[in-house]
Each structure stands twice: as structure tokens, then as C-alpha cells.
Image 1 (cartoon, rainbow, N blue to C red):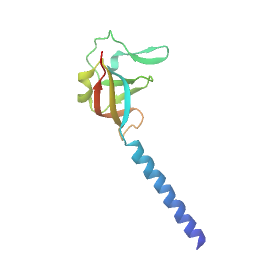
Image 2: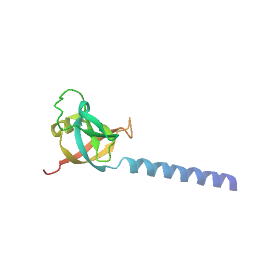
Image 3: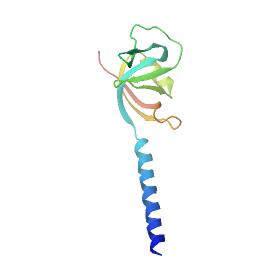
Image 4: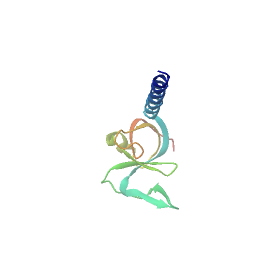
Length: 112
């Protein structure tokens, strides 16, 4: 009987930890970086950045964070008008690709 009780307690604790992790990762995160056309992303000192002289218009828009990580953007229509601009945005990781792709919930251009 004691073993069954401990087993049940362990399963409940594990379930609570998994549930807490899922709700935490679905919370919007604030990120700063540049909205950039994927063809305009270049490597400078082994860090991806957006080439400000690039005029390419075709291809998907991506987010290049200030830390140098490139994220695909799930809702392109929200990001495209801000291409080439440094922004602060709130976003959540998409379900398909937790670390590579984000869905923007709020987007603010930073002043000149």
C-alpha cells in the first residue's frame, strides 16, 4: 500500500512539473532585434546580422535577435512592414518548432 501511495505521489509531482513547464514556455517573451529578409542575413564575426544595404524583397522575413539568433516568423504579415527595422517584440514559440520559429503578439519599432 505504501509503495502505491509513493508511486501515485511521484506521478502527480511529475505531471505538475510538466504542466508548469508547458504554461511557462507559452508565455510571451520580449525580444529585441531586427526584422530582416532571409536573403539579407549575413555572418559577421560568426554572428548572423541583417545587411542594411540589402534590397532583396523576395523570400520569407526572419527575426535576427540582438544575441545573434535567427528565428523564423510564423505570422509574416505582421513582420513584413517592419523589414530592416530594429524592434522590440513580444512573441511565443510556435508549437511546430519551439526554438526556431516564433509567433509575434506585439511589435514596436525602436526610435531612430
